[in-house]
Picture 1 (cartoon, rainbow, N blue to C red):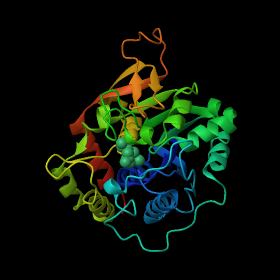
Picture 2 (picture 1 turned 90 degrees about the horizontal axis):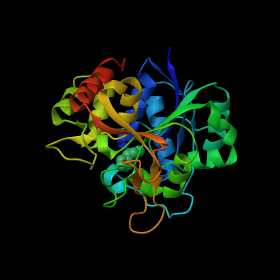
Picture 3 (picture 1 turned 60 degrees about the vertical axis):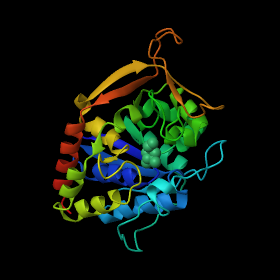
Length: 306
Ligand code: BDR
Ligand code: CA
């Protein structure tokens, strides 16, 4: 049985790698890709998602819909210093990579989710589209099995001392998502900064056909991490979790999102269950087998017919 998923994404180098895994793994059935402003503007994240889909020849099977151009309230700030001006530098995907759907991400999400009894949402950018979806079409919630979201941290930020980038980008949307009553797995910096793609793994990608070369070339243009210890492939951890939850240690707790002040964008985990009286709204990934992540990453790419 395959797992039906929808990815909401802002490619972005690690998003591109997550899409690559989701498109190709036979245990996943990727129904739709929606895009959001984040690492770069939404016109670029939409083009980048289409480039990956087209690279694997899946334009007829996996639709892409463009989404929110800006966060709900906070002004938009990109991460081009990390992902380059295009968001996916270092590899030439050509000029002809197809078109997005005529409908918006929110409409596409509603239609795709309502068409299924049960689907898993995988957001790897800010959660603006999901907040808009839940506000406009709350009936989708009962069709969502779970949300496996990259973002947040209970151990400090990468954007500010307190905040991780995806939640920092649109904290108001994150608050809506965490309070929606849908099961959430938080795949945050607590694990993604541990599972670095090592320099040795990056070298091995070059022996793995055009897909390996594409990922290698993108990762070597990625300004997150370094060439000594490796690069955090944050968003890829969501796909690894879906396929190998046994490689993660998780803890259930309540996650609150800070929406103003110096900790804006922080995810506060009620680790002691003291503030929310033991109630929980998320399963938080707190540890990961980093060696297993590297091994799996390479096995996935080696198995791609490209
Ligand atoms: C997150 O921020 C983005 O730059 C990455 O694509 C990832 O989704 C990590 O904090
Ligand atoms: Ca991302």
